[in-house]
Length: 205
Image 1 (spheres, one colour):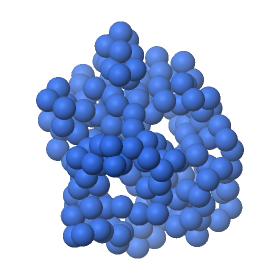
Image 2 (spheres, one colour):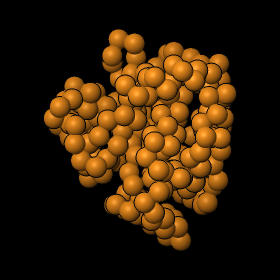
Image 3 (tube, one colour):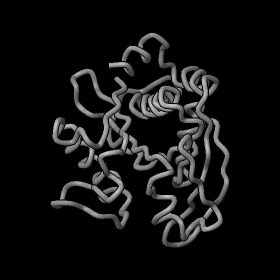
Image 4 (cartoon, helix red, strand yellow):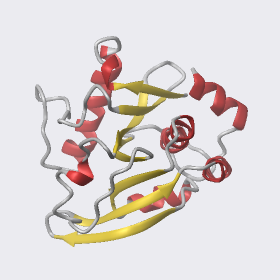
């Protein structure tokens, strides 16, 4: 099930946010060994986890969190204008209709879709598009490790790589821009096998 939550809901939904930040620590610190801030030894939280931050979550049938991604409006402080600016100094994007997607985390979802990816990964891609369509978003910018391109491709997400960075410290990093449109939604649905009525009903809950 696709669920959209906002940063200002953290006190109302403490268990969901705690699990989301635990999963991010598991993925980005324990598995990927990123040098990022850890709170209380178990939560990956940084200055971009604000009240105005949006999170697209995939929930299992039992109500537990399967994975999430973080969305920020590029008119506000975001990672491309902060820690990643030194990697892509020639790329600056600021627009009320362009949002940034970061912190894609799906640690252990074993439910598979026909495209060979987890249901959580597919729902997050579809949910990001649905959020954009509902809120006047025209494009999504993402800075991701090069292997993540496979996930976008298998989910039917067409995007354009605007810049590439490679270094011993960061590995291969892409700066990409993807379109939010009904055509993108249809492409994601076809690639992932997520059904129209089911996904729309879930996203609206």
